[in-house]
Amino acid sequence: MKCGVRFCGGCNPRYDRGNALEEIKKSLSDVEFEYACEGVTYDVILVIGGCTNCCASYEQFKTREGVIKMWDYGDIDRIVKVIRDLS
Image 1: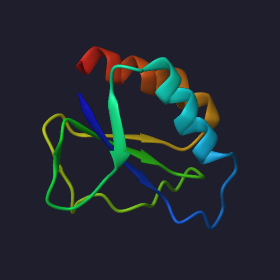
Image 2 (image 1 turned 90 degrees about the vertical axis):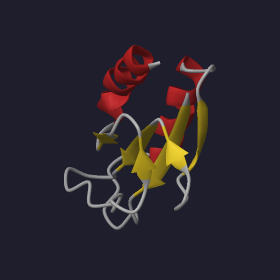
Image 3 (image 1 turned 90 degrees about the horizontal axis):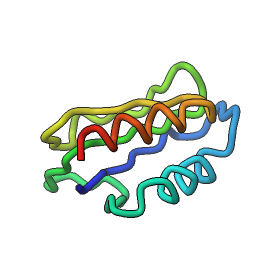
């Protein structure tokens, strides 16, 4: 499974978004994570927002299974479960 990652701009981060991604990667070692790029089709796009606005754009990316958004460090378990269920 290939997961494109999109971060918000970080204007109001309430947690360490990079650390959250690392935690997700540890739990999903069989998933290929990369920064989302236009022109690439991903199985899923993970949007990591720093606050509840989760305002990062993602419409420019192609995905087979849709977009998953997180905006809190407490979302990690939910994200891991959703991606596991898709793979």
